[in-house]
Amino acid sequence: MTYQEKKSIVSIISSIVIFISYCLFMYPRYPGVDAESSEVFHYWGSFVLFLTLFSIIAHIIISIIFNIVFRMTTKEKEPGFADELDKLIDLKANRISFFVFIIGFVFAMGSLVFYQPSHVMFIILIASGFISDVTGSVTKLYHYRRGV
Amino acid sequence: MGKNLVGNHIRKLRFNHDEMTQQQLADKVGVTRQTIVALEKGNYSPSLELAFRIARAFNLPLEEVFFYGDLKND
Image 1 (cartoon, each protein chain N blue to C red):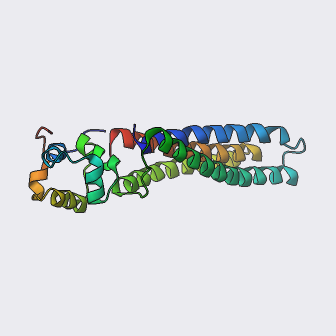
Image 2: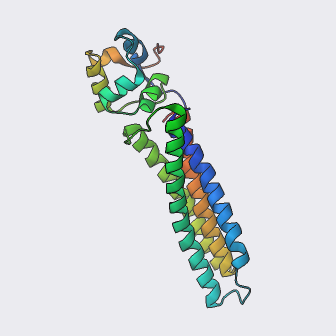
Image 3: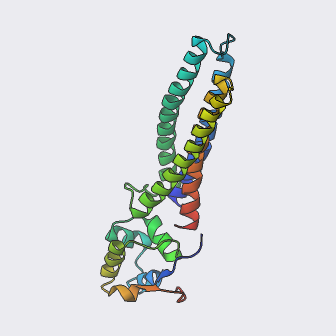
């Protein structure tokens, strides 16, 4: 298995672990007040903001650890640049990831149209962000294994 | 994903050029080893620029390295 394939697998697993652990951390902190109060919106706002920050930092740390482990186990240096194949696969992964997120966004707005509570909209929005991230990594793995 | 119609003789040519490794060829043409692996497996059709760089690395014209159609790969 090549560096890029291993990296995609690590990215999928880390995205799932980060998201689940963050949700488990934040779930008990949901304010038990009126669903439309400003405290609830504050909760969802901080949920999204800190998830983004936490996710970026965790991904950087995991990426550094992965590179160290890769060098130690394979005695190979990881590629220091992205060539045309990497860029093409990145582009395809980003396109699919973006498409998945847009579908989620439309569903989130649809929930408001059908008078669903605001937390439904936020949950759909956050879930679509997570699914789009995983879909992007799965797409990369698929193209690295099966070709473009 | 189906195999590409653009095939190549890279593996055979590497062997004929003092058993050049995939990494050596990758370094010569400025791509990662993964891309050479994908090319040899027929999983990727290179850009025209990369195709020329590979042909130049072997000192051969383009059509002696790459072919179009269902010619059997090495």
